[in-house]
Image 1 (cartoon, rainbow, N blue to C red):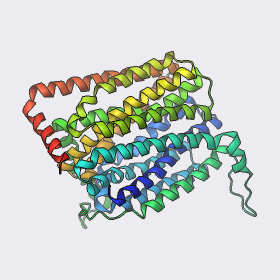
Image 2: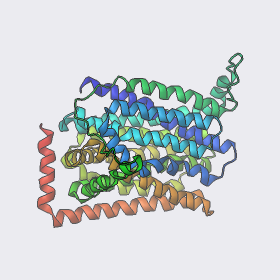
Image 3: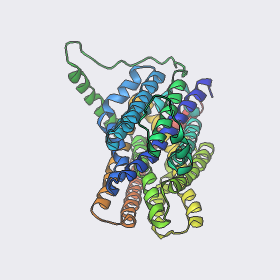
Image 4: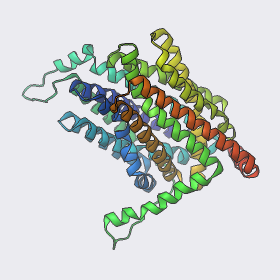
Length: 434
C-alpha cells in the first residue's frame, strides 16, 4: 500500500473512535436527564438526517476539494456538535450536528481510496479500512462506556482548573470533553493526508445566481447519479445489499444496548462492552473476506444478510452472557464478511460510472435513509408501547425479508440479463490484474 493509505487509516481510526464513543455517551446523557426510551432510540435515525438531506451536496463537495481538507472540515463540525451538547443544547439536536460532520466526512474517506489505489487493491484496502473501522467501533463503544462509568468519571470530575468554572459537572459532560480532544487528534492526521493528484471537480455555480439556486442545481446531477447506479446490474445489487446492511447495523448498536439492559440487567457501561463484542465478529469477518473474496465473487455473500436478520430475531431467546458472547460474535462475523466485498464492488462500479465522491454520496444517501427508516420503525414500536423484544423481532424480520428479496432480485437478473451481468463481472476480473 502507498504511504498515504496509512495516514488515511490513522485519521479514520480516531474519527470513528470518537463517533462511536459519543453515541454511548449521548445515550447515557439522555438517560441521566430522564429522556424517554423512544428519544434514546431516536439518536440513531437523528444521526442519519444530514446524510439524507445533504446527499446531493456532500458528494460534489468531496470531489471539489482535496479530500484531506474535506475530512479536516468535517471533524471541526463534529467538535462543534460536541460543544453544543456540552453547553446545554438538546442532545438530539447536538448529535444531529455531529451527524452533519460525519455526512461530509464519509464521501472523502472512502472516495480517496479509489483515487489513491488501483482497482486490484480495493478489496484489500476495504478489508483493512473496515477492519480498522470496526476495531475503532469496538474500542469507541468500550471507551464511551468506560468514560461514563463511575471509576473513570470520578477521576475526570476531580480535575479542578484554578479560577475557571468549566460547567462540566456530570460523568457524561466529562466524557464529552475528552472526546473533543480525540476529534482534534483525527483532525491533525487529516492535515497530513497527501494530495492524490486527481483533478478536482468544482461545484457547478453561476455567479448570476444566488447560493440557494446554485445548490439546487446540484439536485439533478445527484439524482442522475443515483438513478444510474440503481440501473446498473451490479451497482443495484451491491447498493441494495449495503444499504440494508448498514440500515440494520446502524440501529443494531442501540438494539444491543436495549436488549442487554432488558435480558441481562446491564447498565450502559456493561452493555456497551457487549455491543463491542459484535464488532469483534465484524472485524474477523471483514479481514477473512479481504483475504478470500474477489470483486467478481461479491454477490455470493448475499445469503449472509438473510442469516443476519434471523440471528437478530433469535436474540430474544438469549438470557445468559456466556451464550450471548459467541452468538454476537457470529452475528458480527456474518456482517463483516458480507459488507467488505459488497462495498468494494459498489465503489468499483460507482467510480467507473460517476466518480468516487459522488458515488459514495449516493451510497450514503441510500444507507442512511435506510437507517432513518428502520430506526424510525424501531422508535415507533417502542413509542407505541411494544416491548423491546417485540420491536427486535419486527426489526429482524424486516432485515431477513428484504435480504431475501434482494437475493431473488439478483437471481432474476442472472436469468434475464446473463450476458450483461457476466460482462460486468469480467470487467471486475480484468481490473483485478491492472
